[in-house]
Image (cartoon, rainbow, N blue to C red):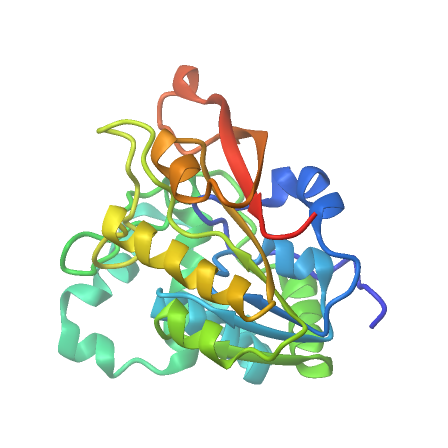
Length: 278
């Protein structure tokens, strides 16, 4: 497929890889039949590569609903987004819809996708975050002119999703990995192992991704390797992660930490890119 430069992330997402694309791109294998991204998030790598066949998945059901609505109902989504207002009182009214779980369940898929995109564009730092009850809890961002209705990008992503063979799911990542055929390439960008006791951020979905999950993921990578499937994984450069993957190729890259609310605490941090191929 010919790449479309208008195809780009529609949400800002914690750990997004847009700023690392120049470092990651040369590390991809030259050939593969199917692309798989079990922790797709904002999709920076997917939309940059634009593979013709792909399996994408995420644990966040609201995010996956956004992608499915863009694929199936993009015109209705754009119309809904045009109704939103960049005002504090309105923001909290829309944000708090999920406090009434019964009423929230009655929202259509289009209304839920529109709500999520609106909140992502207007909340503080574009940070999608939920509490233990699964309720969105980022505050109003007070931005002067946020791009709530990015119609050109939404239409371009809709066209890509419909022209390519994109399998979209909201299941445990291991289920996706079991489905993919030989000849596939898997890019894994899971919630990162925290570099300190206070740095963990897992608020993009209910539950967490602790060290037991990191070990289970490494075991899934071992299974991929035994099946002859190439994978590349990003994570923080902690001793724990480097020890888990010491059987594989490990490359250190510099990434900018951008989600801290204190500007002075943002900056370059070490990450690892792990591969089972050269």
